[in-house]
Image 1 (cartoon, rainbow, N blue to C red):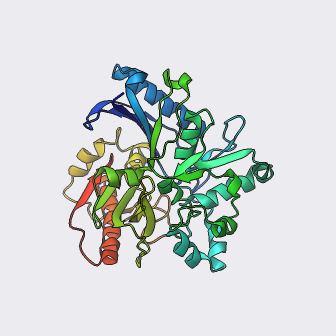
Image 2: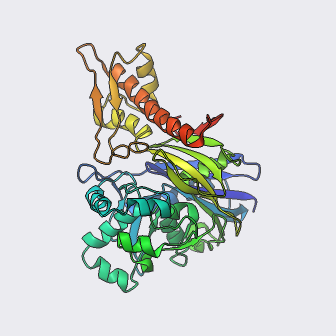
Length: 411
């Protein structure tokens, strides 16, 4: 085969793209997934729905392109990153809804850890801060709140992982439990230098190593798909977190090159070479990619939790637009925001503020304020957050970012 089947499992949808050896898009299919908000600040997904929609879009992309399984050279997986799934190894069923990267429920747990003075140690080892954004505290929450989960984990009955690991497990019929270095670097459990699980971090976050996947490079041979899914076994040849995939895909291959993705959230990454660069402005240090046994490349990252999802809120929450693209006409119908400001902190504030308890607000309303002013202020609120991150990244780099490459549905 000469085609690549690329699985892109995101926060708001599952998508499959088939591309040829020249990078041309042959076919694409996409399905939205349901968002669950059981309490204020809680965000969940049904991991079984994630799997079924991802499989359905893969099968649909093959049909749309008139492509047979023997034309596919390999499968690549990219995914929403810090979202965590814990499942039963025997049945392959999740023991709880997936906790999404936007979920804030563990803020109190992390405040208690911060009071113990461990944040500096966590940052030094993992490049991350103590924030509910990352996977470790979510994993511990599931083990602590599902009856018998910790006892079952100790017996080796449970497996856990980010969405890449979950999809790989399902694709291979439970034969492979792995994660790549980029996704692993978002858990708060990976030692940035050894690129293996850190015993110290496992102890701090109370996560048993027995449930975790093996950490490998992005271009590892991850196994083959169950022949029942596509008609034959197809090799799975790459896994990489969505933002690192965008950094690589935007060809930010030289140190100092940067990209910003306007997706559900907004994520700016700057490639920093083969040594981890620590931020003075509360940005994250993360693995950008690793090929084979070569040294890993690293990146600085600024994470904005709410980007395009603020437009979804205008559509679904306020009902002032019918479809997301309508926001453009509505916002352009007024010359400015009329003094209205929207701070879209629906899931707290990310970089460089890192306030998990912050909430969204609309300021400056008058009797003359209209839906158009709110729409325009919402788009400007997304831009202001990105500008804050760019300012922090410029300060860390000690030089202006010369070119910022952009992508994502909200771009």
